[in-house]
Image (cartoon, rainbow, N blue to C red; front, side):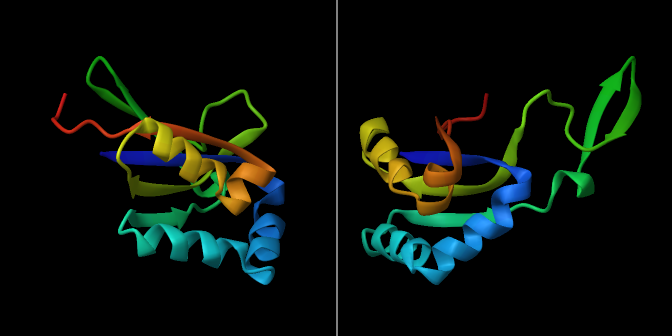
Length: 116
């Protein structure tokens, strides 16, 4: 089953956290370990929230606002999509993620196999 790992990190710390994990090799080692099992599908860092926009519609009118509309310190800084046998395995993989697990929070969410 496929799982989405959403990385929530305090935005101001993302660059430093990523640099630290690249420098000590833990990020590359995490990717290599997941890839060796064929469980790594894709992942990416996201641009800062200042480059984001939020879209919604009301009564057929498109409304666009700058950035995410959240009341939290942590923002979604990146994501990974992995394939694991079950949720427990996905949680273990997420817990070993060097950047998000050490410097923030990871939301692990199963990807629906059929459209809703």
